[in-house]
Image (cartoon, rainbow, N blue to C red; front, side, top):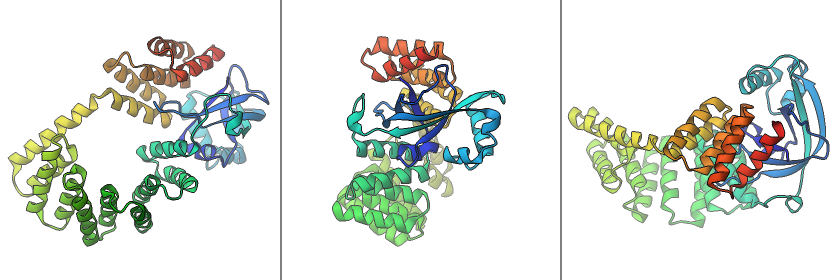
Length: 376
């Protein structure tokens, strides 16, 4: 059962705008009519299949010819063949002129024709958008949020996330428009009011930011995030002592809030209260280091590195996660994916077997194990 995984560079494949991809020739080459099971980088705990497809054409091309063909490179999402060459060398390591690649064309199959589990398309698109957003790939996540919004134009979560996304891209006025649309649907949503305040602050509208944050604070006066941003806005306004009080209020509600401890330290330092500032920084560092020892965070870091094609570094992260949680089948499965991408099939097989011993119902590990066996 051939499996394809896609990264954020291939967002047009995820959204269905393109139907071609290039992969290194496998031990068992693809043939016309083969069924493809296509996933988004194979690492999320809530992972859902992106789509199933049928191969309609396969062309075998040598690397020396591939790197001269700008048209094929652009079809696969690259600027030109030169960029393709650099990326493929980074992903695959040593490639010589005679290394063969498959140019795979396919047609997506309707959900009712899938062999495997069906999906909630809107949920899938939102999930992919959220992953891209968390990775800082805002142009790609914007594409996905827009696609999700077409499926559900009055979804408050999507409207808010799209506005957050536009803020990251510096499109503040457009972001405000989407926050306002969301607030028409949920006028008592304090988090959207606060997000709106952050965007206005970034746009230089300090008064507007304070007004929006006050509305959020009125709805939920004990939320640490809203308290923290109230402090930030007051500090920008030059009201330093008042800002300090709000950082303290934030810490009273959430004493492990790294951002509040750090902001308090910066402000105390600016006010000449060095010893208190050092104490704040020490707390910020202590709680930040506690987070770093989280197996889940190591796994997430591995996922992000895998998404970027940094397979060796991703492997190190999964192994760190497994040191902390050696019986986590998802971490073992993710480790196997990294090894699979490095063409270390025997070691990958061991990882998938370990995952299945821990959790025989791990469907990802079952599918990936089959992929390994086909390449041994």
